[in-house]
Image: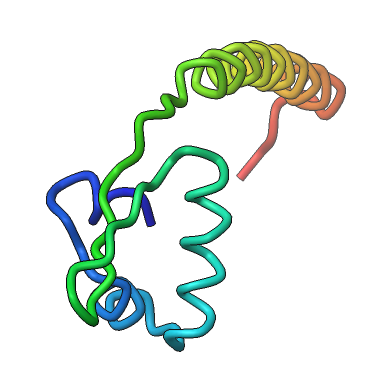
Length: 98
């Protein structure tokens, strides 16, 4: 939802249409994003234009990167355990005659 206002100003109507939402629903979403500083709005006549706000997501991106690295390492360890278990099972079964 932040991508469109990040590229250029977008109206609430344009955003609602792009995401298949009602105007009321989109206004609520925009209000939450505006309070968080992620989106800024400006009334231009009867139209409300939205643009990317001044707040940055660096802290959130750092937090996500930390957990991404953690889970990536855990999944690699799980892959190693599963490969070892497969080898053990294959060794127990012995050679197959076909």
